[in-house]
Length: 120
Image (cartoon, rainbow, N blue to C red; front, side, top):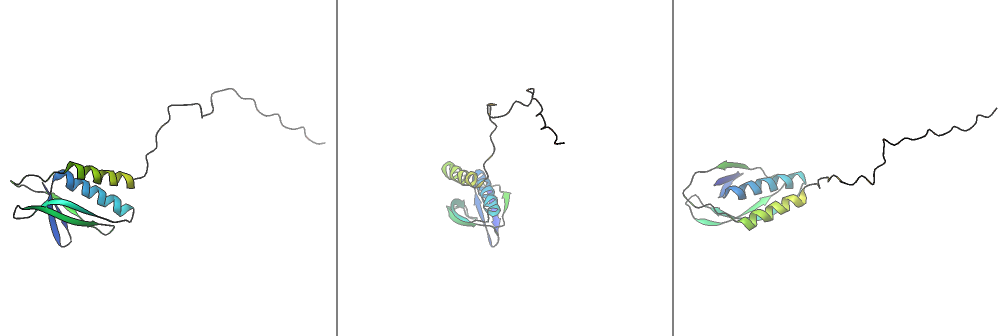
């Protein structure tokens, strides 16, 4: 389990969820954007609940490992939703083409152009 510390408080949640939130918050900051998330959490008393997080450019988080006997509030669908939101914000990655048809053959012999005759 991990604890997300932020100004004024802390939220204890699952490892995968905390990692996804941190990555998403980082990408939102790069984009100068914000979002809110409703994440499953565990109180210090061990009670399961939900916490709303406001993520934005000014968000500052610290995530730390926590030893606890409480079950990890894992939500695979929410982790995937957050990961998809993060990918949506990231710049597209270039993909190499396997076709060389669009590129000139730089090894092919070429003739130098004949210069025009000089005027006398």
